[in-house]
Image: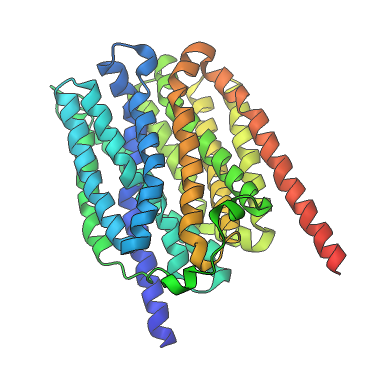
Length: 401
């Protein structure tokens, strides 16, 4: 029986890795090209990042309905619907480009948000797939490894297909985005995850407002918000900043590729680092690396500075976000997980959406250097909170001892 259970865990994790590889390729396509297509189709320079911002908004607004659907019908049904919308979103965005219709293109990137919300939830599905709580961090890291493959697929799709339809530049990349979502459908159909907790178990669940007021949730959520929010904000602005400094579209796409590779490559060992050094220590290290990326970006505007900053930003995001996700797992009981995870992702991606709406305006007004300098105080605040929580825990342990 144990062998059968272990085999099912491995199978589910393998399918989630593959689905993450395909679904995780969509954001690099949207983020690396969304601003450039926006510049091409929009008559207002400050609206150029609107397609990317609407993708983030669609993702944020989809977290709660996606979680409700997962609770009612199971994760697999929600994931299948997400992939279907991923196909439609790519087709609509490509059609918007071919028609030179900025609003239609924005509709396509917005719809992609629901698929993005489902893909982000794969890390929580990894927790469901593994019964042993001591292996949750490793399971999260393993699924996030799929993003390493996505980091190769997404930017390479941009490079190979952006000029595949000469009459409509960049449309081929969004048709390819639709094709990747289509390939994910049979993988998601094969998932066999545990069902949601029975309604009887849910009667003992604490109110969400009570959980949200606990120090554990507050610190985990803020760490996730800042880690992901700063990464997405800088990642959105970077391609336009690079092109504005005289670098080519291909070099900008390669910069995003190295960034996304750096985001997911550490996942091979992040779980082991958490097991050895602790969740807060690894989360804090990630935030320090994010700050280091900002400092490097302030040192110059060469390709080396851009790419180096994006790589540091990616590694910092990996440690910070996976660490924050692992911290979140300590905040809830099994019967509470769906609503707590949904609230966390709503806060994370809602903040990302709000921040990304201002990225184009900020880049236009304060420049690339101003954006990087402005994020350093936010990192300092979260590091202080993590230190406070660690000190509080040590004092509690000393009191009990």
